[in-house]
Length: 187
Image 1 (cartoon, rainbow, N blue to C red):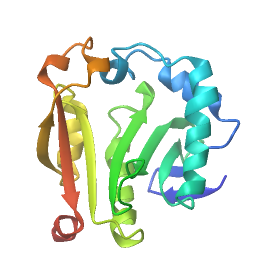
Image 2: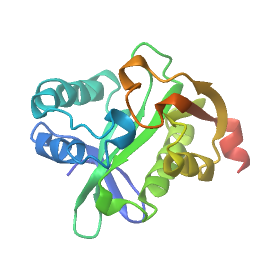
Image 3: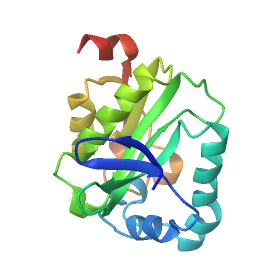
Image 4: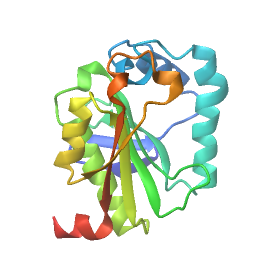
């Protein structure tokens, strides 16, 4: 396993070409997908033919330093989901998105905070990042709480994208949280 980053309980690594089944299982859980698709699973062929190739191409584009990373428990190696640290497709490299998608079995254990906190540290101390942002639905209080625990501040409210208007709570829109390197250093 090519470890990208370790925390006390987690190992984050690059996804491999044969990891499609992990992503398919994760995206087939209606609870995991609730705030993303209204609970609808991502089609396996979309993951195999589009998502996973894009993840792997991201490692090439960003020299393995940014992208989507598989998260595993260090004790036993169970796949718990993924974390993301990457810029917009044509955006500046010093402004990156932070995100995560975890299996239900990993919820409520502090993994999202632990992995995100480690990625913020890496972004600001090793990768030359100036600002990290994250977005979620306004009604996704679990993710919002994590963003606030990380010291991120509410920066903006965003209308719900048209392809997500059918999701419960979408009428409240989305929120964007941000943290700069200077704000992170003051914590």
